[in-house]
Image (cartoon, rainbow, N blue to C red; front, top):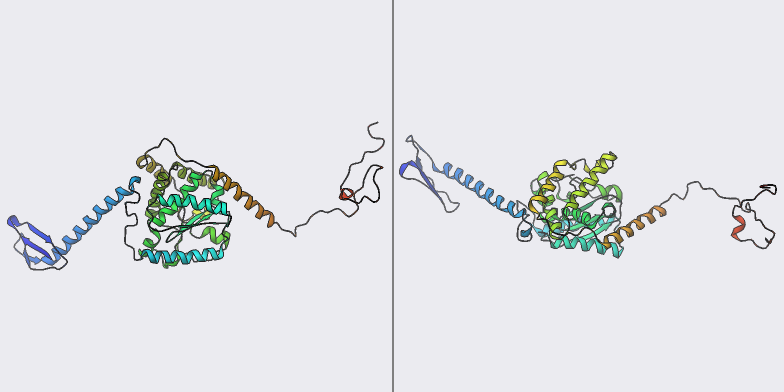
Length: 369
């Protein structure tokens, strides 16, 4: 119930008790009466805006405090999709990815990447369990589907120079899932179909790696998140890797390295970053967040021997595939049978080993006299 009364001095007093509205005339300063309902509705709107603004400011402060990780709701916002529905959607898309992409089944590689990811998840705001797998492709990419279904391209591991750089990319993806950016964006009506919302690192990598390199034909309905969601994922990702013990500066290092690659060889990453480029502002914002919100520690995890071992193992796997995929129909040079000659009197006609076919060098009798 909303009561509107005129009190001494001509001021109006409004008491909001419930949704029911009682209307009667309200005397204004010029002696005219107006509809109290209109005034009450306007007042309620202002009160609601102030309440929402206050709650957002409070939530924003918690998002900037890594000590609040796990005790805050970073997924707060209008969302028409329940957690159960989001998980079901992600599972459906993940099955499609696994059906069409090549998943690495090497236990050493898959266990290591999963362990790094699960450690980041434990130090995040995520409310869903994660399933993490590695796709066999050289594309530098990682993407997370709604509900915690996470895929890391082997090319990303090979491009990273340290475990901290790998963790930085993975924590960014985990942040997208923890904040439920996919279904929140779907709720906003920014995409046409919910079944087309894989969350891609760097924003704009949606489906690129798996469609181009692995021929995965899942539908893709958009190529980037809103700048607000990307900025939030950057901040949360930095906090997650920081809480996990990694140097947050490695996240910026990886950004700068990819940006440098594009500058040196334009077009290398142009398709990947076309919808949401790695701007200087984004890098500078990440650096600023590190300085302002992440208290410097005496030591960080930079890399591990396991990372180096897995990277070496992946490189060998990729090199083997390149050899296996060589064109067997390309022209080759071969010697005619028996074209080789042997030297020395000790050679017998019965000795027909492979040495007979090897080319030999002979010296003329009159040479070097």
